[in-house]
Amino acid sequence: MAISTFFAPVNSLNPVAPSISSSFSFIPFKMHHHRLMRAHNSSNGPLAIHCCYETGPSSDPMTVRQAQMPSMAAFGVNETGSSRPSYKWQRVLLKVSGEALAGDNMQNIDPKITMAIAREVASVTRLGIEVAIVVGGGNIFRGSSWAGSSGLDRSSADYIGMLATVMNAIFLQATMESIGIPTRVQTAFRMSEVAEPYIRRRAVRHLEKGRVVIFAAGTGNPFFTTDTAAALRCAEINAEVVLKATNVDGVYDDDPRRNPNARLLETLTYHEVTSKDLSVMDMTAITLCHENNIPVVVFNLSKPGNISKAIRGERVGTLIGGEAKTSVART
Image 1 (cartoon, helix red, strand yellow):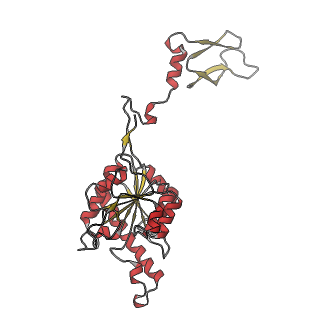
Image 2 (cartoon, rainbow, N blue to C red):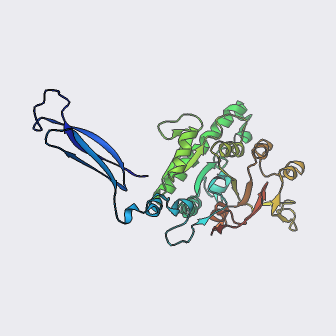
Image 3 (cartoon, rainbow, N blue to C red):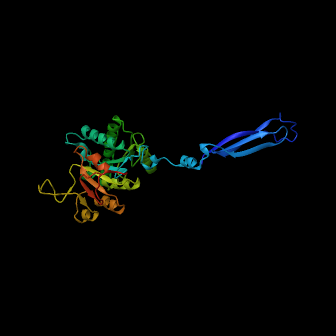
C-alpha cells in the first residue's frame, strides 16, 4: 500500500517556551493514501492530531486493491491483451567455425559472410533473444595441423590458433557494430588493449543489456578445441542451446560428398553421436553438452535465414539431444 509523508509543525521541546510564537520543529508523519491526518494547535495547549477516513471514491477498498495490482506487461501481455511472441530459446550460443568465415576460400575472411551473420543476429537480438558467439580460427591457423612443423610443439601451435580466433572475433565485432549492434569481445587470456578478459558475470550482464558477446581464444588452454570452448561457455553463461554453424546442412548418416544417397538426420541422441562416431563435435565437447543437458543444432551457415531460424528455435539442420519445435506465441 502506498505511503505518503508530510511534516506537521509542533512546539519546540524547550520547557521555557512562553507561547505559540516559539520556534517550531517538524516531525514527519507517514499515512496511508486513503486516510487523512489533520493537525491543529490550540492557543496554548499541545498539538492535537486527528485521523479520519477520506470520503469519496478513493476510500473504496476495491479501488485501493486495484491500485496495488501489478501490470500485466510483466507477464508478457501488453495493455491490449495480446501476448508477445515467446521463442523456444531466450539465450543462445552460436558457434561459428573459422572455415565458415572463409566463404569460398578466396581469402581468410569473407566480408560478405560476416555481414550476413551480423544482419541475422541483429534480426533476433531485436526480438529480445540474447546471443553469445564463439568463433573458431581454422581459416587462419589450425594448431593441430601445424604441430611438429619446424619444431613447433602442439601447445605453441594451439596458442597461435587461439590468436587466430581473436582476429576473427575483432573482425566480426567491427562488422556487427557497423550496423548498430553493441558487441563485446572477451578473450580467455588477457589482451586488455583490444578486448575484455573473460569474466562470466560480466558476460552475463552484457547479454542482459542486449549486447552480443563474442568469446575468443577458445578455453585459453592447448589441446582443447573451440567446440569444447562453445560447450563450456554455454554451460557457464546458462545458455539454452549450442548452435553450430557449418558448411553442411546438418549431420548425415554418411559423407554426402562421397555418397549422393546420404540421408540428412533431423534428430539424434548424444548416445548415437558417440556410438556411431559421427563427426559433429569432438568427444570432449559432446560429452560436456550431454552431462549438462545442452542441445546442439548443426546447420548450414551459407543458406540465408538459417541463423535466425536456428536462434528462434525453428526446425533447421540436425538437432542433437532435444526436440525440435517452432516458435509459438503464448496466449
